[in-house]
Amino acid sequence: MKLSQGERMEDLQCKGLKIIQNKDLYTFTSDSIILANFVKIKKGETAVEIGAGGGVISILVQAKNEAERIFAFEIQPEMFDLCKKNIELNGLQEKITPICDDVKNFENYLKEESVDVVFSNPPFYKETNFPQSEVKKIAKEEICLPIADFVSVASKMLKNGGKFYCVYGAERSCELIALCQRHNLAVKELFFTENGKGKVQLVVLKCVKNGKNGVKVHPNLATNDENGNYLEALHTKYVVE
Image (cartoon, rainbow, N blue to C red; front, side, top):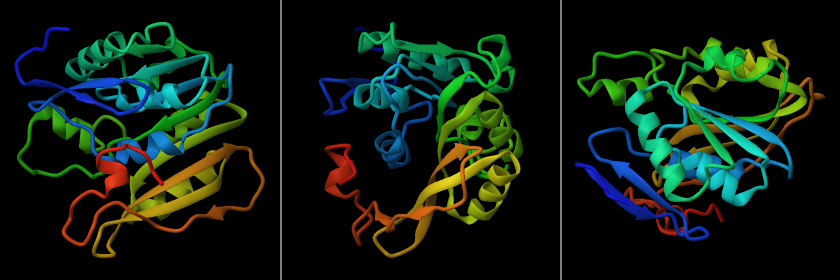
């Protein structure tokens, strides 16, 4: 496949999969890999990714599970084009359907309460004046998808008993969990990530729609060594040990 200006191809080291990234757009981080390893989908189930970016999470999730179909919503045309390119690169057109639209319009494509699993690494920073490209700003800051809308849409999509997987900024974990409870998404599993210096950075959770009370809290996951380098399991193998 011919690469465009700014693009590079990388080996995901998982079942021969590859990913094209563009340094001029938004490139994925360990957040995406952690989530992809956490998501579980049963054979024949339908899933939705909210904010697919270049498609790495949907591609890895499909490789590690047996979803019937994953609908990958991406609002930014530049990232959608890259997502579509990566799906085609890996021959996953029959399994992953990219959709270039605001996920709040999901009912134009899917019925309410028709999805088995929703997963997302959404923009979780509040809007700032930090100088960066518009693509990166939308990918990182909740300009187009405020947290309240994000959780509400996920709940509307899910069937009773459907699963919601999400990674979010740890400093907003109370806000996220409160909204999940408000929208009938019971938190069933969660853990935090920390850097090599013990600073907690992310919360990763699994919810069940209309699930019972009771949550399993996993130990913190260290993503970096004390020098700030990604640990081997994340940097080269893309596997959470």
